[in-house]
Image (cartoon, rainbow, N blue to C red; front, side, top):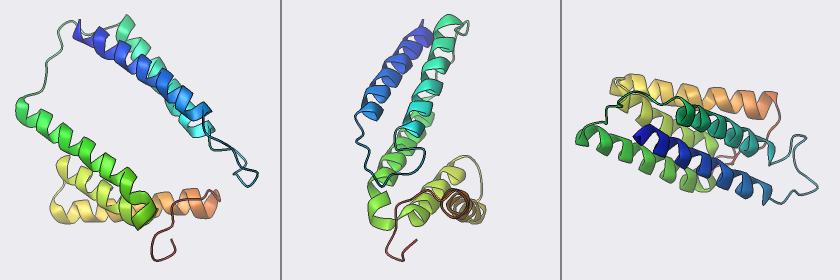
Amino acid sequence: MSDRIFGVFGILLSIGYVFAALAIEESFLSDAVGPKAFPLIIAAILGLSSLAIVLRPDAEPQWPTLARLAEIAAAVVVMILYAEMLPVAGFVIATAFAAAYLAWRLGSSALESVFVGVGTSVGIYVIFHLVLGLSLARGPFGF
C-alpha cells in the first residue's frame, strides 16, 4: 500500500511541476529550446515512473532505518541549498560542492568525492554551456 501512496504523491507532484513549468514566462532572448522544455520532460518522466509504481507496486517494501532517513533528509537539505546557492556562487562552484557531498554520502572517500564533484561540475558546464550554448548561472568568477 505504501508504494501506491508514494506513486500517487509522485503523480500529484508531476502535475504541480507541469503547472509550474507552464507558468514560466519566455523572453524574446531565450534559448532555442526555451525554458519550459526541460521541466516538462522531468515532469513527464516523474509522472510515468510514478504511474508504474502505482500499477505495479512491490509486494512488501522495506523502509529505511532512522539513520538512513536522516541521510536522505541531509541530501534534500543539500539540494535545497544548491538551488539557493546557484545565483550566488554560480553553476560550477555550487554543482561541485553538491556533487562532492552526494558522492561522499554514496560511499566515496573524501578525496575521491572532491574529484567527482569537480569533474561532474566541469563536465556538465562544458557540455551544456560550451558545446550546447545553454546559459547557466554565472558565479563570482564569471563562469
